[in-house]
Length: 215
Length: 221
Image 1 (cartoon, rainbow over the protein chains, first blue to last red):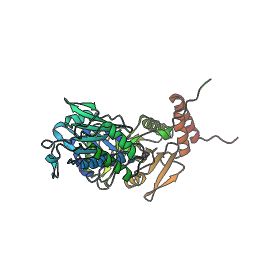
Image 2 (cartoon, each protein chain N blue to C red):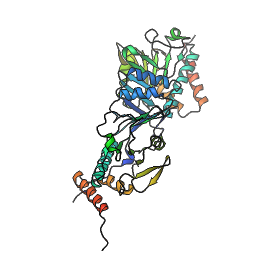
Image 3 (cartoon, chains in turn red, green):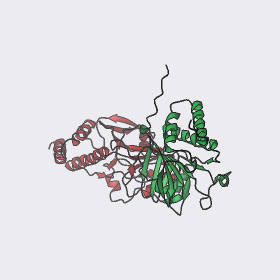
Image 4 (cartoon, rainbow over the protein chains, first blue to last red):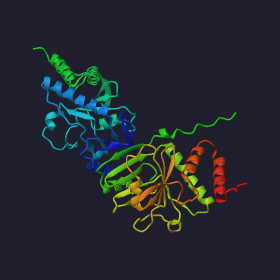
């Protein structure tokens, strides 16, 4: 596991190297393949190396739980790929989200050991913790991969961004999981930081059960 | 009424860095190739651990002041010196590499004159390495410098300058410098802090005056 220079755990550590070749990027990915942190983002020579804080990691796990529990209740197939590396040499870009999910395209990647983004679809939802003004424009980057939906957490609230004509537009409701709204995400994540694990999961389950269409 | 400039709160100088583990030598060399200008970011490699630091302007300010201080003192004490800055020093056989904040040759100065490329199988390591280490080190640099056989290290922790001399493969604290024998850690610390308070011209005069005093101490009256 990689660590960060002496910064308190409330600060995410991030450095940007301005001039990294694709070859070096791939070498680093290989060396770091056993670790889920740090996250590497590559954009035409610029490499960002980021280690999230423990709070961000907690929010991350809770987002995954939220999606899993609600999808289970709603009987929707979802695959959670965590911070898998998504890269395309042809556009000289790559990223490792905090979390990501396949919903609409879950069947397309089911059982696949490795993804080739020239052939396979990108995740339907990417979850990003976005607390520092990154010098890499993540939205443009995700748009290049045609990621349909971003859930963006800024330490306080979560917003949902949907790709419309190659640009991200803020929307209240998720397209991938239409019963989920930005409000719901924000509220549940806020609660996850104070409620006990069981209490929180039961709340989510109860809420999801209420969202099911009446018979 | 003159106002004294506040000395910089060097403890808060932020230098961004990340420490990665399990990095191969070839990845390290690949990163060095991508960044031929060694000043920033700075890469330190120790048997799989890779420290990447992007230094702040304040960090570089301290670095330049220390660099100038060494050059002035060497000149005053009539010691030949040659600064090699943040040159990359790496040895594949040791699986270690570093890029110091500043480094100098003294006795070996003539051998290094005009050198454009280093070959550490043949060329000597620098005799003095200066390190500004304000965030407490996540990668121990002293054992790394010892592996390269660097005789003397000056380490500034944000408050004080410590001098280390290599003895039997390990560093020992020393009050005075080996390369510049009259120079103490205390004096360097004082001049460093002063360098941020007064004008450069006045500072240079003070440094020179102090050095001259060390050469010919006043006779007690």
